[in-house]
Length: 382
Ligand code: NAD
Ligand code: ZN
Image (cartoon, rainbow, N blue to C red):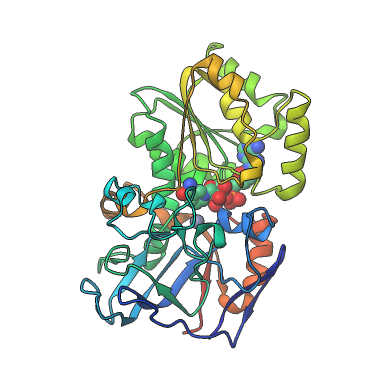
């Protein structure tokens, strides 16, 4: 079958003769992919920032598809069902799943005490192949996949597998109180959804910071927020303090992670500047510009080597930091309702439709932020 085949940093291609996935466990299903996306998280893999990303891995954790085969113990799905598949692989039964921490399932990645299971996201998250392919094996098929409502546009559905619940959870973890000033770092798909969601929790003011004007213009309109280009600011931290009577923002959201747009070079620069007492990354800006006692919500993804948090400032300011992979399955019912009622319009962020065969070009465009790209969708052959 045709599927993405990772060959090393910045080297990705679609190969035609990769093996079809098979049922490996009675709880598996095989899904024929109808659409998949490239995510900012995939860029961390592509940039070589995620440890143990093995050559030969098929990426892709955001996908929808049609069930074509089910394992012998699958009861909740049948062949022909069209499903959205949460990016977290979760058993639904372990101690963490019982707390609805579906991004932290133990069974899906028992080798790790740090990460749960994710489709197509390196061996640090279980070594599963992903959905940038014609077909994909879906473990714990009775639990994760959710039948797409008849009325739902597939473009909306595919964004419910990650982007929408992740942005929403970013706002939720911020513990936003009525009237709060919320600053979102990053105007990518995740930051856009976080900004939009912040209003749903009662924010009084939403500010988005990025360096890409085309994304800032989009989010300004889409989420009705204020936007600032950090390259035009002398110091984003000082700027935010000025905007908030010198107190700092109530809530800061990091929707950037390991410099998705800047890759290794920026990551290294961030480290060097940190050692010199400065800071460039969104996470440092977030920590340094939130108010005393405020909350920093992190959904941006970091590798272990990026864990250079200005912890002294966290302590002195009494900041609460909340971070996690989004718990997609927990949030799906609410997200479906918000799409149905028109509160959220996910598909508006899709800018590119790229045939799966041309995946290399898709990664290049999204990684380099060419052609005003916000969210690319990959379309497998019919
Ligand atoms: P993206 O690459 O499209 O967007 C990142 C944006 O951050 C870009 O627009 C870039 O210009 C901007 N940026 C770079 N440095 C910045 C800085 N210092 N300050 C402000 N903005 C800056 O990626 P995305 O798809 O929106 O994903 C964003 C992050 O969310 C990634 O780290 C991704 O891995 C992570 N993510 C997390 C989860 C989760 O469950 N926690 C799920 C999906 C994605
Ligand atoms: Zn994603």
